[in-house]
Amino acid sequence: MKDTNYTVLEVANGKPVKAWIEGVPLDAGAREQLLNTARLPFIFKHLAVMPDVHLGRGSTIGSVIPTQGAIIPAAVGVDIGCGMLAARTSLVAADLPDNLFGLRSAIEKAVPHGKTHGRHDRGAWQDVPAQADQAWASMAGRFKAITDKYPALEKTNNRVHLGTLGGGNHFVEVCLDEADRVWFMLHSGSRGVGNAIGSLFIELAQADMRQHLANLPDRNLAYFEEGSRHYDDYVEAVGWAQDFARQNRELMMGAVIAATRTVIRKPFEASLEAVNCHHNYVQKERHFGEDILVTRKGAVSAQKGQLGIIPGSMGAKSFIVRGLGNEESFCSCSHGAGRILSRTEAKKQFTVQDQVRATAHVECRKDKDVIDEIPMAYKDIDAVMRAQRELVEVVHTLRQVVCVKG
Image (tube, rainbow, N blue to C red; front, side, top):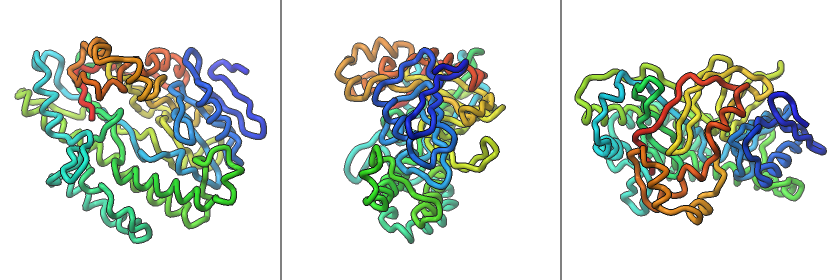
């Protein structure tokens, strides 16, 4: 059935699904995942689905999952606290060098990115800088409390990943807004340690529910019940990982600003407007008069007046948005454009020449290892924004001129 703002999927033996998908595709696999999640007994009122919705592990990317009395580790996923940070500077387009390769190179040198195997992983610090060490010191006590209970988490990339980008769809960009003002924007999460925490607790949830897994529509929907030991430990660990992710983005932004100052000698202010928001996370919130847990798996909080970031693909525009506080969406919006092709399928369908054409206006890598991030692998960001016009309003429209990918 259709409402004025969203499509409602009725679910037999489950809660309804309210989806803001007008004019954008919802593939059959993602639809089935949504129905599976909606049948869990602890879902509160309904699932909310954002227009960038696509197939995920266990739970659908682009979904908002409200729960009472239980938490699903795989719904948060393994990139805990993944999100965006954007900052406007006092620079304008005319202040940028004509050739942007030098600026991209400076950022690439300042921010470890990607991954190589062995002792000298290029995506980790070989010599941790002072700012990262200071940030780590403020988090180390809480981390020790977690590793005292789960020693396997101690031998992970934690301190050496704080202030690093990672790979995949993580990026650093230099953008121009509608007034040709320069912004820095980046996308990353809790890196190796967040992945280890997420993976460990997904396995623990499945082990705890071994007797009940056969009754679950998907083993990745295994959950912890409130009051259980693993529930409390997961809430503690996931909260720490989300703080790590936020700090990670702030450290990288400092490095990007410092790198730019080595290329652009004109003095400039940074962070005149700044937005730092998660889009893979869980937190306690109050909705419809009740205290609940809200898991946003590829979704951004859009409380009334709250600023957020919705990036497009590496060849499309991005948006700084202001939340409209739509309660039916649990005050949420999309976290990006959303994939329409898997990474494998994108590499099958497109060539390096396609990538070069699609990113002709952006100073970025244009090689076979980034074809999976080609703009055509994503939904049309304009259609995604139209579908969620009741959730957010656009404050700034950004277009990339430099993109650093892992």
